[in-house]
Length: 90
Image (spheres, one colour):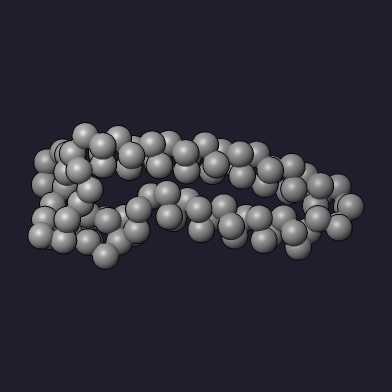
């Protein structure tokens, strides 16, 4: 059973890109809070956060691509499917 993601056991879960986007928004908020701090530690954390944001953006794009691929080839999920996976083994 998945804890956060949509699945047969968790039909009210989130899409991966939704979770990643929420994480990216939180990291951005942290960046804003430390943006005027010029201490070496803050600059180091900011540089790391910028790299994390880049990686999260790449992950969001990949997750969107997965969703588009599944929607295009297998159709959008329907409520009547009751959370059954479109691919893979249930």
